[in-house]
Length: 318
Ligand code: UT7
Image (tube, rainbow, N blue to C red):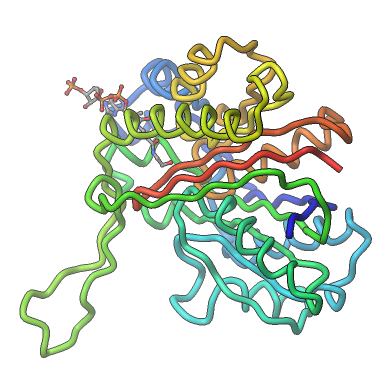
């Protein structure tokens, strides 16, 4: 079963932190961050919970699609960590917006949106499921060591949502997870069990940036080629490439390899930083708000993240 997206929404925390703000307490500077990543500022939670952001995005997506919470048959949240280890963020969103359908989280790191689309398409094949709410929400600020300039400058907090229903927009989807868990991780610790042999504390995000960079460029480039081959289309026939916003240099590198113009590769990393799984749906929301996506347009989406996971899909907008 394929699907189509019928509404999108966003939830962004109020507090905006510029590179100059970071340079006030870290050994970093605007020039380094902009030239190495393309990031100028990011928004971070101060008084908001992740549920607040996710619910705001969800309600906007419902509103734009003309659906009420009771019309939703399933809620899938993508997050690397909600407000609680349990209940799931999806249950928190359901509670907040007044839904009563099944709800669960998926954790595929930054690739979570593409994973959620594949899961949604499976559920929509069942006749009892008509409308699914996908919410990608990340509070990266709580996973960062704010004394580590290698990582904390890169990420931001935010949520983006979409409602999906039965349709034929999704033409191709491919997911993978290569088993290298050491390159990017947030250790969860062992708690205070008296029985554990080696006690480990909850840790902050650590990443081997250059290795992940190389993986990202390779996996996105090969993902595009595989999709084009499978659908028998050329890069010229793709109207927009909505790529995970981890680093502007990764997007530029893929664009150059494909020989395609800049306007086909929209960016929002300058204002939000890396929002993990919320990056692509937020970009989609913005493109729709700016009327830059029309029915019949062909979109390629691709993401990668901890795992290392990767995923790409092609949609012809309905
Ligand atoms: O979405 C999840 C997936 N994540 C990613 O895709 C991230 C992929 N990786 C990257 O985007 C890049 O590798 C980074 C942006 C993380 C790093 O860029 P880089 O060009 O690979 O820099 P580097 O790690 O090689 O560091 C170069 C130098 C180092 O100094 P030395 O050792 O050469 O003296 C770093 O200590 O830059 C230094 N540095 C900084 N300097 C100022 C690292 N972070 C900063 C900083 N400000 N914030």
